[in-house]
Image 1 (cartoon, helix red, strand yellow):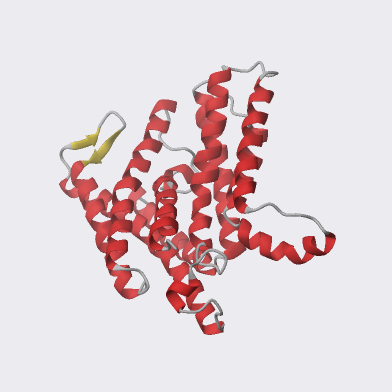
Image 2: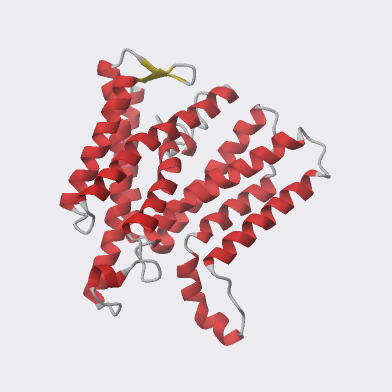
Length: 312
């Protein structure tokens, strides 16, 4: 079987499963993102080792889990409140949790490095903190996007005219969240596919040969145009609540920022002297290879939805 056929077969099997979990949302989506984050952390550490850096794995793995947890914290807070309230245990706000976590992890990383004798302190600290933010915060915003469509974060009065929602309205809100996340994921895949086949058929001028010799300007244009077109199509088929301008902007984000994320991960691999971050996914490489665009797109889309689309 050719590499292209393997890629298509794996995608045909994996994509429906990912979209089903995205639609379910909540702790199901959170658990999937956690698994991806931890596998990505393992791959990132392996890349760092090839460059002589020794990230603090005992900080990186739990840090990734905690940073991703930040983005589901409002749901967790609500579910734990009956227990903690009765016990008289105070819970921090989401912002307090995020701030304390950042400070505590940075202090722990610096303090631990004082007693280590492996590698450069600057390289070790840089690799550990980059891994935390790249796979903890950046990937965690995937959970954040889905959780924006919960009662705790969504401006329900602006869209439903009342803050007292019935079962039908709650169901519609949940569907919006699932459809939006699925649309973002699908648009990324469409962008990647269009860039791959468009570049293969028409690509002559290299986009960034020092980083990724196979990527071309033609592929980048095909990917960009496909992302914009896909998001506009999703606006009219599933995302009726989303304005046309917002759909256009999200398409622009995916078509541009996603390709930057792809190039950054390619630079990581070229610097480490490897073709793929791992061989976990046949035909696709590792988690970092397959979700490189998502890692950069997710935080930008999350911030755009939270501070622009749902601005109160």
